[in-house]
Image: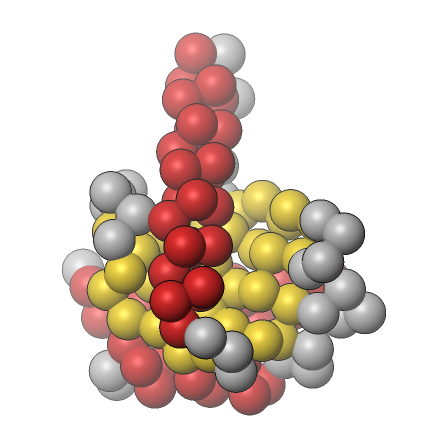
Length: 119
């Protein structure tokens, strides 16, 4: 299944989802789908991927285990960022009114599908 299909299905399945992007370890976009400007999604994806990388570094220092995902809430949106193996990350943006717990279920499913395609 192509990356674009997985990302599009994720955004369409999750109420309040506005975008999803698969980024490599450098924060470069591999593929994305958004209901808004994709350039803005690429910027969000790159920055959130860096945050995930830094969280993983902290966890490695304290033997806390592999960071699967993080939910980041701002005044404008909520973002879920998660690892897809060691080299990629998935970022999904949500409207503030969206329910993160429900979104996480579908997010984890998308991570598994992406990992299957990549590895």
